[in-house]
Amino acid sequence: MFELFTSAFWSEYGRLLLEGCGDTLLMTLFSTLFAYLLGLPLGVLLVLTGDHGILRTQQTDPVLSRLVHLVNRILGWVINVGRSLPFIILMVCVMPLTKWLVGTKIGVLGAIPPLVISAAPFIARMVESSLSEVDSGTVEAAQSMGASVWQIVWKVYLPEAVPSLILGGSISIITILAYTAIAGAIGAGGLGDLAIRYGYQRREDSMMWVTVVFLLILVQCIQSLFSRLSVHLDKRLR
Image (cartoon, rainbow, N blue to C red; front, side, top):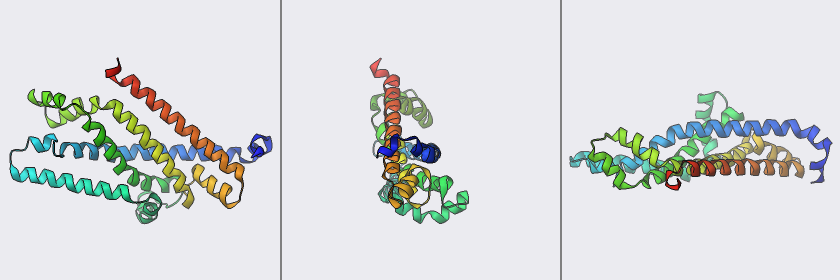
């Protein structure tokens, strides 16, 4: 443990740790971006097709109403299945798809597809929860003025839910950050890989502690940044 405070430790492992931090941040940022590109529309669609969603309540044709209900149930089932799979098992199962998409099963690139697939259902539920908090009176007012579904989503749901979406974003990023550490167990790189290879396999406790501290710092920075941003953008607090 006391090796952490020696120049010999940092001269030997400093470059590795910086590369590990960089790889972890790359995996987290790109996975979050692509996961939101999938999860955000899914969450919006869940709200629109729900029991009180505007695609359901505006539908006068009973056949179309049942179809919208069916779409909601199928989406909900797919998302629940995606959320229930342990990440490390999912990562192994989708290796052929990962190889086809990015050309490799390991490293930073090899970790991104399973991270996206695992995080997108979680994000979809977070988005659904945030949009469900929007005042129904505001939505009804927009409907009474003749706003289309797209206009309601873009100008009512998303702007009104911004503070909640930002807080949900911090939770999503931190969850993906934790998944990158798990991905390191099977060759994804990053801080998780360093913790496994040096901290566990080589019994170098100092490396284990450093990776833990680095991950804690990243989590605290993300949480503080998004919490302040959420408060700043919450118009109810102005």
